[in-house]
Image (tube, rainbow, N blue to C red; front, side, top):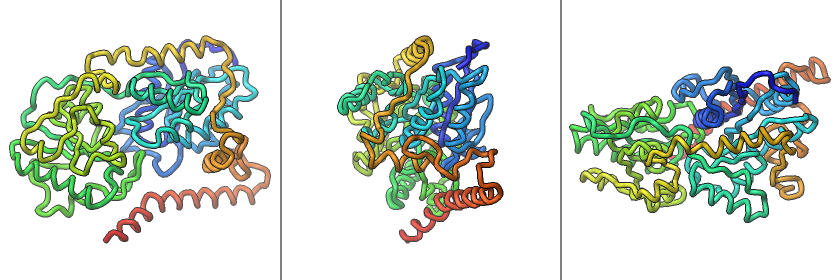
Length: 445
């Protein structure tokens, strides 16, 4: 890798959804505050729309949609440029991280120096802990958003005999904003909806009904139902039963003091006096600001809902409690272990991550990326993950996945075949985003 001629760090962020783009870009700036950041949006079912990107608000010097194999080709070429990337942030689902790690290992195998690779989680880790972590193993830095997560991450890696030195404690990169110092006029209750929790019509209709009833019981309050996406858009998770459609069918409609809202969560929190959710990461954002926060128990405290993560937090409550005026008081020790930094320590939360990446850059040529999953450790699992991203078992693009803009051997026939495949991928994406959810909803009627 050629020597750099500029002191401004160059960072590439590859993300597969709006929330992961937000996490990846803001994480990059926490590690490299003066970075020149190039954003790459992985083409797929959750590729964010222009509206979603605007709502997230994370900035970049450049931003483009890209296929995974084209990103790898770009990384291969960039490694030999005059101003190569210093750091690559993989803000992807676990399988995507694993595929890119193998692909990058292949792309950089003949380079003298390579960028440091950073990955992590966009929020609360309450399911598929071992699966997600082992798919992320092999990155130079695996960020843990709290002391609680760092301990769990290291335990998983040690449990399989894998190196755990990449695990680095930090915090969520999008915490911040003004502290809640007093109630607003009107007093504002925000229900932070989630795309996939709960996952059925009856439970989602119940939560909407209770929010509406709370507004009717308290006409002096404003109740905002904060939505993540508009119908047809997708985030990190698929939303098959949008609250917008449920609200349109609500008996009597929504009262005047209850409405659906979009926008940046930080801006909504600026006017929030009580945050209500099932298990959204918004709970951590509001707790960081000192906003009273309720994690609902109405549907039970269950792993499938993710609210079990808040055991011991002091925030568990029901709509009946809230209707009666209850304001949860969080447990300070729980907050400290969850990386909420409500004590004012947030400014130093990324010191360890910055030091880790700086040490990697100063150490000279980094060793080849070495994920835990290989053809030897997971021969029945890894090939399928790689194939979904157009890679063979060795991390090389499979036949028919020529980088965009280059004509592979085969002339016009090959170009036509690629066009057909691209159309098929578009049709598949449309089916996942539009047709399949509709069919599932019809089945529930």
